[in-house]
Length: 291
Ligand SMILES: Cc1cc2nc3c(=O)[nH]c(=O)nc-3n(C[C@H](O)[C@H](O)[C@H](O)COP(=O)(O)OP(=O)(O)OC[C@H]3O[C@@H](n4cnc5c(N)ncnc54)[C@H](O)[C@@H]3O)c2cc1C
Image 1: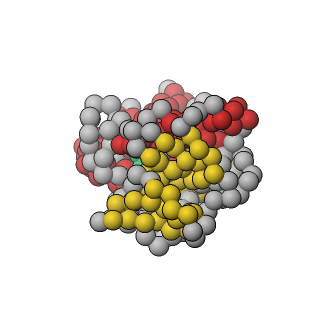
Image 2: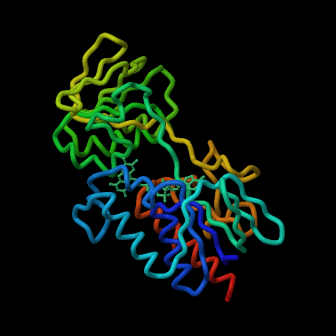
């Protein structure tokens, strides 16, 4: 029996665990993979304060060591269900655990193009704020046509020499305000009805993409802003928008005692720093309710 069960040991979940345990509330953190979440997928993090350049796995290990030394209990397991009666029961494929509160910190999976070498080639990114500075004065493409793609293109246009927005159709979902801003940027070229059909590489580094099976577009970097899938298939009945959980300013969902934090919630900025902020807010609001 724990005060709080946290599902997901990415930066959001680990921040919540640290604050809960240090405040004297017992917590259990469960993850279906190695602790660290998306941080494990990036070799260079240059925007996490206090570290000018740190490998993602190293940062994850430092965070995990800190929560373990604080006394947080960690178990490996894939959560398959949450049930609420007088307490919450969280079930994994092999066990079940009980608590007064649950925090969902399970992140999201970014959508991909579905091309063979996509996961292996260096130069493909899902986050302009994270990786944009690696492409100063270079040529980049961004796939997508929603607000995320257009705001990322604007961000990249302040760093890169040339930015191509690559939209598979003519339909633009981005707000008018971003469309106008894009038109006013000389170094952004918008391509409609353009599908990336191949990624060309040399020595495992992206060199260009093929559009519609014929045109070659020379690129140093390719950003994908084609949506993501929040990982919440273990629970129904939560308020959401396009799958992203809706929470209030205390990170509470519409179910009392159930919180959600990090990349799994609807918000404007998906970063390690913002995930940690969410985790701290959830932990402190749980503590506030216990005093
Ligand atoms: C390639 C890449 C590079 C990035 N670079 C940067 C960067 O340089 N700077 C920056 O600030 N941000 C960066 N980001 C974004 C940042 O990593 C995320 O915003 C952050 O990790 C989100 O934290 P989270 O804890 O919400 O989710 P995640 O980090 O996604 O962690 C979620 C955890 O939940 C677990 N989980 C999911 N479902 C279950 C389940 N059913 N049962 C148990 N466990 C479950 C997962 O295994 C995972 O460990 C990058 C993202 C990517 C993909």
